[in-house]
Image: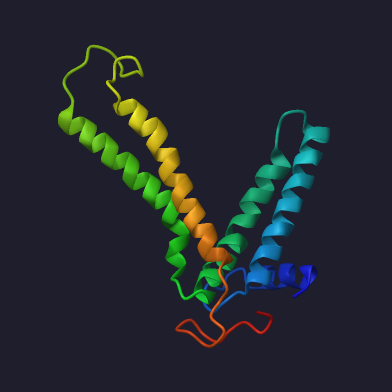
Length: 162
């Protein structure tokens, strides 16, 4: 698959969450978005002095095509698209759990909890949430980078270019 074909395919299938996407299709589209983000950042720097309207617009426009491409890419490795939500969901579960546990074990404090008066629980949240997010993001990248099933799986036939 060529660079241009990957971009056209992902943009054409922007609303298609069924089917499969090859590694080449997905990662070339990711590369295109990285390049577009760099260009938008450079133009924002030159034209808007500290504001980022082009970068923000690109982010808004790219959410749906990137999500659908990732969803289909996960189908290619025989995983449901919901795995895309893993980093955010795992971090949210960690944070909610940490605050619930803190609430269950908390003794009344006279002031707002800080690192100096929190007896370690704030450290757990400040260090744990990024760690959970990092580990789950790495796992998601591993899934997205795996070789797809060479034959038909439950999500359809193998991509022609894969």
